[in-house]
Length: 225
Image 1 (cartoon, rainbow, N blue to C red):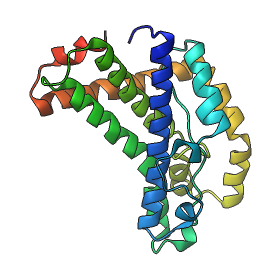
Image 2 (tube, helix red, strand yellow):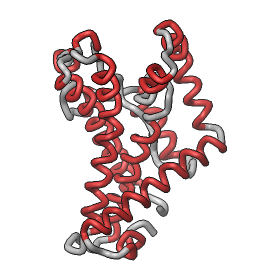
Image 3 (tube, one colour):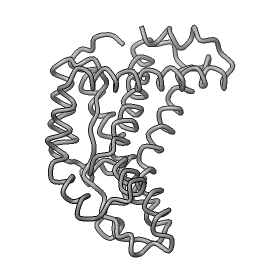
């Protein structure tokens, strides 16, 4: 979607951090709805970005991806939200919903941004439209990346329950997860797969947004050139 100057890159990173905050807040909020107030007690049920920053996932990897072109949108994660599933009345469904709340919230944000962008009454400033499209793409990237079945990413809960994995095996995988993720990000095949998943989801949401507001797909292509 084009090359960004330094000011636009800064704006994009700030939007990325805000998206991370929404993601982590959603985990905390859904856990609270299911009966666990651990995250709220630790001050994590907030949209304040400072409460959710992770040195590797929110700072190191995203900034590196902004500096070194890698043909995919910025991906990353926030500091894991503390959750005690023993407080859930329905542990399995509560754990799954709490984990998936983060990616789902990012998809909602992406859809909201794309609906605004595709609306005919929205401003015709291409720079603004371009930045909002990138923000939508980042949220989609966060959703898809965090669904990977590796701890501490949200998809790990599906891996645990689908395979009926023991807690010992899960903890063993967790010890190597950061290294595995760093290796995967540097594999061209993985980047290509991730790029396609993000790209198809982005255009799918964009197409749906155009239909919702009653505009043609030309509106979508006008701000992503």
